[in-house]
Length: 341
Image (cartoon, rainbow, N blue to C red; front, side, top):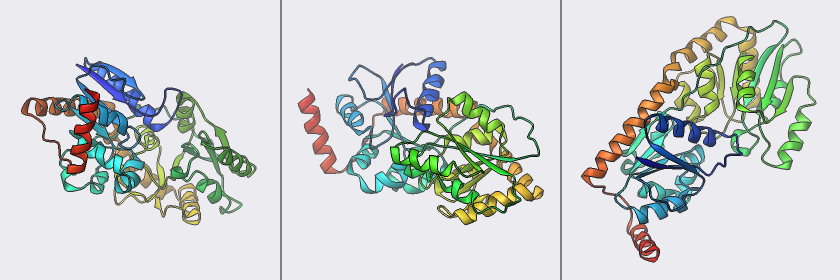
């Protein structure tokens, strides 16, 4: 079967959406499908479309639904989709209507959907291959941040937290990520003069994984996240996590995980970092709780979930789809289909 996999993240980007798209393309090819990975649908003949990002990929969603109203259309919802766009953007909501199936990246994400959309949504946790951890030394307590410098990531919360640590602290932070604006780059350089915080810029995935392997802790500070690849990497590799208490992180780590701080609160984050550094029992609890969630990010689990969803959508195609959409969307789609024809 031919599958068009659409992501607005270009091949030159090293962000979470691109990593997800490339991993899914690899899984689907291993399952015997022909996969075309592109940023925008080229209007080519295809049997199924799988799309990342309801808002940004909406033009492809709309054209495909008009061209192939009886064929499967799967839309995977990103963090900005779930926690912002589907509540405020008409095109994002229309993508939900036109989809024959939806993907969310952690189970709490289902709570953001209306019942009519929740019924066609499936949870697929993002997987990661484990890295071989390096034996840490005693001089530093190394913490890594793996995330680009943009508003949704709250990228400098760890840098601010390090300034609140006591002089005796051995915490040393390495932050890997590309600045999305010149202003973010200037701010990163200003923070990097502090002795505990080091911004290392954007790293190839292999180097980012090596950074994780050298770390005792991952700090995940986003204020908006669908289900962070960095958290999957940490869970797969046995690196404990401290994280902001946003739904995307809670869905990954569990509702009663003891390593949360209130998003945006550097004082609370500093307390968590210091406790993880100095309280061995607490650190072991974090590690044990992350280990208990490792099964969620096994590659074979994600691959099987994708395979199951593709089979389900094909079965539904044979039974006939009943797309749920409002009258305004139906009229727009009919006009678009007539114009395209």
